[in-house]
Image (cartoon, rainbow, N blue to C red; front, side, top):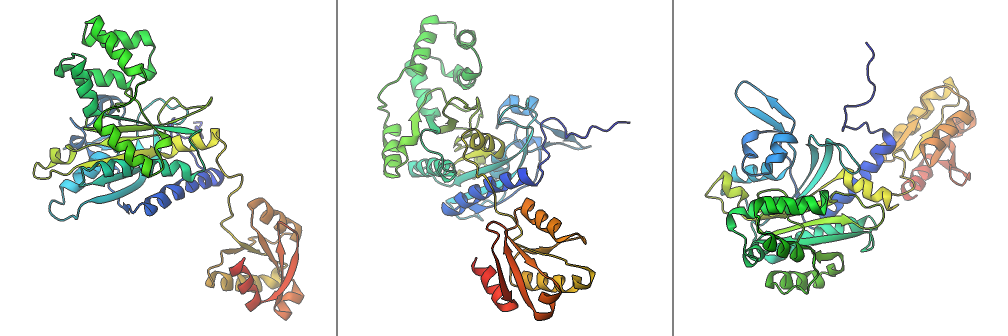
Length: 421
């Protein structure tokens, strides 16, 4: 039987060069979490299907999940983290100090059609603030999202953060004359409007409310530009301006987010420019009722967002924001000149590692030029050349692989130089 050497569709093999890029993205996300005072947490990859029912979109549960059925229950490979977090918070009633700022970075699984910026297995970073319904929390979570992209070197020319509010949308739908009974259906259609043609969009709206005049007013409302007078948006943008991030942000009534648990603020970051991804780079919002759905005694408000490594990676690549090179994990390679000097090379490597200097020795008896080529291809910046004379005198040659310069050091000076360079 011929074995397909490729991974399953929508899953990835990450060889060291690709893994370096992913780790670079992870480091930026973790650094942002630390900078803004988020605490790290984690939960299980498998969750009971019950925690998602009536709390997230039907499409996500019915069409986009990987499930595992046991004798007693149906488990879901987590497609998102927010329901898991809500379950965890509800399970610790009275034991947590609020407000909480929490961060998670882990695997998620969604059975979607793979495309640019989307895979079936991906890592996702979740940032959440729990226990505060303040507009300051809304501004802080937006500030965190913006910081992620500016930390990569992106500017307002590269991305925009679109802001809306479910509460404001419901007020506007009421003003336009729509029945409250169909708000949810209308928001679901609006959420998908950028994925369909204008004709299909209007037909979908008319299928829910066949009043052509009312639907026309809604479409005009969604796509017209206006000076925002809503007290919520005026106050929010006043704070965003003080945070010096208002230039990245814009009210957009077409952003409603597809998940049912959002109650107020909703937002997405979209890529600008000719190579922009069709999907959001990041999305989130306020979910003030999700935790009380698990435990009615817990009236804990929440606001947060999630961003996948796949979408960020694609954004960085198309905007040429990835570093050209990444520092090698190994700082020093110790050569093995011949079989009689293996012990000396091992001794030097052990000494370097004892002093927290990453080091390795060449794992085969090859000519010196092959060992130097190995170091060069791997990006190792320094090579210690240990020949018979060096082993005898305990004074070693250190070659700078970038400049070609060689210096000689005894063991003490060698350690001091490598620690400071």
